[in-house]
Length: 113
Image (cartoon, rainbow, N blue to C red; front, side, top):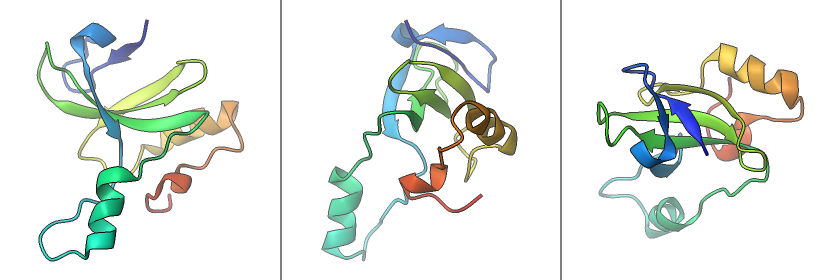
């Protein structure tokens, strides 16, 4: 069972208390964007084998959205952080790279650390 810590209220919640929201750090497109960019935002998602940054909502708790880093093969959770963060915290990136040196979160369309 997947257990994540909500960075806002500090509760360790299992996946039945949470709601998955897909890939984290996507660039949102609003009115006036071209059709190709909007189509990419809606339909093109990473589905990596390995470490992935995801959005989660503490549905049956504080109700806030947050980001989590976890391995899609082992379900190992590396940590969680605020959804307002534009990039994962350096400590979290260092923790992931210590176990998975080949990992780069820039692969997923985010800005460089």
